[in-house]
Length: 175
Length: 175
DNA sequence: CGCAGGGTAAAACGATCACTTTACCTCATG
DNA sequence: CATGAGGTAAAGTGATCGTTTTACCCTGCG
Image (tube, rainbow over all chains, first blue to last red):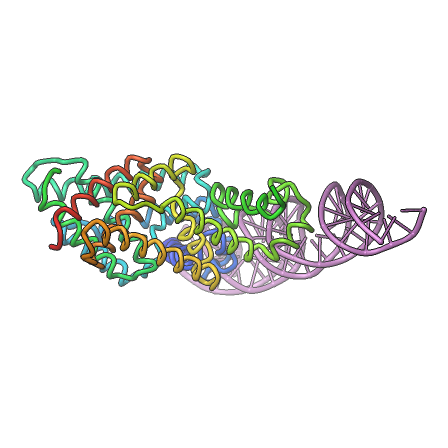
């Protein structure tokens, strides 16, 4: 594994497990297995590193959510949480820690949520036969978001509950 | 207003708007309008102050969620967000910033979510005529949580969507 | 008046922060 | 063999962190 991949992997893990501000650069160099000089040559700055981590996270997460059914979407989320742990959405956490004042982080958050929303819309369009209901998509998105957050204190079972709710909502159709 | 109230109010606002670690004690003393000596006599430490803020927040939030219908619950959340802004659940943010390693914060998070869950259960029991469905309560809780999180990037409208979804779920009954 | 309680402003504390610099090492390639 | 690119370890940078200390100032009360 090359230096850049090692750095991004270590950084994502540390940021996720301990928080962004709480993670010092000395700990980062140790976990990434490289000198601070190389780290700064690769990352530029801590802020830029956070942005890079979020970009990579977005790619990896959406890849995992590349499914073609509502059930698959929530199963994929449950798998993700079982593999990565339940510590809440990393994008919202980054946004919250920086007070929403860092443009790059806010942009990454928006792009990530927009992409996820479009994926949900596509899944629903396929399931309901092209009938695109933006309100229903938003409700499924909220269930997905809520399951991610609630899993922090209720565990993976929250995802199963959200999954059942989403299915019931779609079956009930437009209210 | 006495010193303790001024401190808690200023601290809650700063923590919420800028993050916990990003808020320095110098800024806190300035906004609370007192010397650092008085602040430390009242708060003990920054960690203790965070815990106190969360306790006060729990009280104030649950007081606002003291309603007797499902519609009222989500309307109360919308009112809260309109008044306080949409920056996500402060308890989950505190938990995330500290990596879940501070016992007092984790305890405050658990207590808060447990109390909210019981409130939702009570509302549902009243609405469905005593039929206590714990899964339905969890689903409404997830919608509530999801709306709080999604409001950060989609605005208050997320709460209206969650409200409609909750109503549809309850009307559909046990799946 | 005398004095204690509770406050202030501001300096000082050591620790830690993100980041840079210095000095040295390794090694493939012309 | 010489060399330059790319790496390391470690010390140093100034700033900022949470917290404590110092010295002083009101003010209500016996």
